[in-house]
Image 1 (spheres, rainbow, N blue to C red):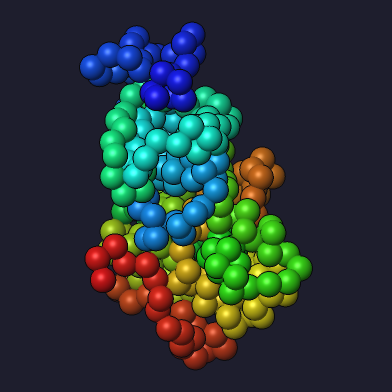
Image 2: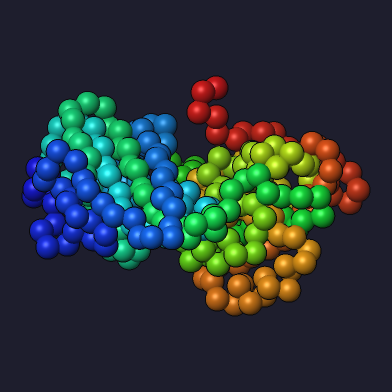
Length: 312
């Protein structure tokens, strides 16, 4: 099964001395670079719905990991894949591997190993990449006075998941479904933003929750304006502004980038924005203290926190 669907003779990948087919992979890290590693596990009925198209699952399991590398400003190189499934179905495996490699090839990622077992439907991917020594950006660098920005259109992906479940219908649902099934990791934006951002995180569990993670790591608070969240036309048309804001704040699955930018580097942002394939929108300001406040017209913006929690 591995040889048929996942081994690719003659396509070992950059800096790979030994790939699939042995007890372990052997890779090389070029001088002057540091290794960046991220792992995500997706379980059926928890992270994706039962019956999700196999090509979308193959694509998505890699995309969510590449998003973590994007948030560090890293360039991906290699991946490993651990696949648990109730039974091996050739047609399903063909579509799964096709989806996985469609994204891997787009970003030059070589699959160098992994494992397959019989069990519940669970997919675990580890991605490894490189960043020039000392050039990565983490969550802990934001400082009071920095602007807080987000890429793309938060809220679209969770609306797409609702559409897949039949809970949203109307014009634009096909685009929203695609945002959930085939998320676009912001690798190009992440590498460019790493040169100017003071802190960065990918938005996977909801904009509100992930903003809190970045700010806690930085020892800061923030004042954010929900009216500045860039909701897409499709989302606004289908659910309206209030429900759209709640989906953006707490829905998750967007895999956009949230980043802090010092005032002294704001002049560089327009140049970066002109060279990336997504919008970059300011939604607030980092403050002293630890409070994260969503304020509208001088009053707190109240919403129900439905952010994803891994353990309750």
